[in-house]
Image (cartoon, rainbow, N blue to C red; front, side, top):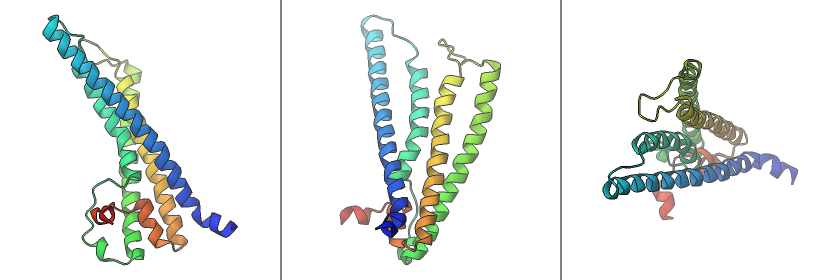
Length: 191
């Protein structure tokens, strides 16, 4: 029984990541819905009263950036990122696992790069007290921190997924790698 537990830890960790990211995706959906309601109220007030709430265009832009950054992690664990699998679909499970590991590691590197760059932008905005050049004059560190934290989360999640894939490969559980880090396939959905 302990051997089975030792072999299944990557799958359990991935399951936990999936549940956390599902909750984050639901929260992002609620935020998007609230933003849509805010925009509709703003438009309605402009039509009826002749004056809107103001700032709906600015706030919706911030929301889209934040939701997108946080949504990347959900797409990773839901295996929804686009990958070309013409070659990998013809490989044995061990060969596909190598490509899955390379894809997860590549995503981790890109996410870390964006997070690093985003940190520099955020810290500069924070130090200078930068504000948006808009009527709301939003302190830029607020939307930047939401966006940056989404990218930092993606970096962490992709690192954990990479470790889980590598562990499964070391355990020679190549078929299980596909359920953790493989490309989602329309063929799988039909079965």
